Length: 383
Image 1 (cartoon, rainbow, N blue to C red):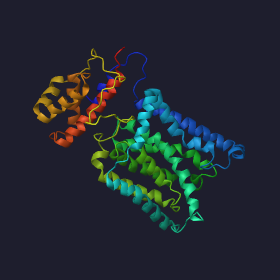
Image 2 (cartoon, rainbow, N blue to C red):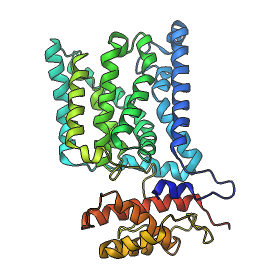
Image 3 (cartoon, rainbow, N blue to C red):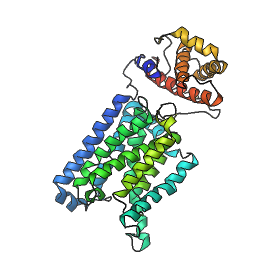
Image 4 (cartoon, rainbow, N blue to C red):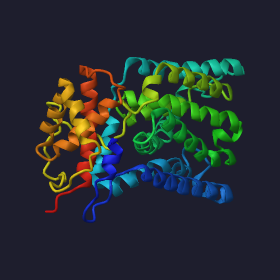
């Protein structure tokens, strides 16, 4: 039995909103496209009137900014709907996560500009610098930082973790990339946007490639929205020369290389980030007891398929048995031991029968604890 099946077998009580799930992704898309395309239609149909009030369609036009921020508005709305004000705070704390493997930081700071300049060199525009004097770049960078990157509160902040609960990172990246590219369609119809002067085919390819590239970076950074926002900023950086359409083809080649290099993590959900809220941990690495956190009802018993098989597998490996003990210690008596054994067994099986080493133990403890926390939130004890 998979952890997703276990979660689905637990029913909610009372009027508490259900946990965010794959269905939430479709609500996210509906709000994002409804708001984004709706505003895009207004900008297209009433361009003169809107520009007379707010100026040209650009990064300083508040109506256009609202269009660009529609994924963030959708994401924050859904987090608030499911987890309340405290949940929004926990969600936004993912902006404080900055640690990522050094190769990803190198690519973020140097690799993206390199792709831009190589594309511009092929394009014959590598010497272009649109700001004179040079310090005119500074306000342009400030606008670029607070426009496009805010989208990531929705795309990678909410949609990607939820998709990765069901499918592997590669497929999540392609699904999300397709929606991400399609959402930009109105920009090709609006004068004043960069997309208005670009070819749509290469652009769509480029967005798919960028979605594939950012996904393993996001997972390696433990779901950092900050890293995703900086990636978005670098892609939109006003200092880079115009590299369209060649940058799209180059990023597609980079995406293929990223998938090949990270194929083991891109094709399984083992290391995929699935938490929308930042997990709260104590100084000892364990989850602290929080009085306001709903606890699992003691009379809820999951349906365990092949429970004897699960127990036999756990007992056959001492480290596997110790994982169960670690998770039970974290539970403060909230979690049922047969459920823990079942989830640990399923998680270990995802390693294709490999022996439980220390690194496997750490990953399994984290995965199972996160899954039980989600189940815990679904089953509040009546006060």
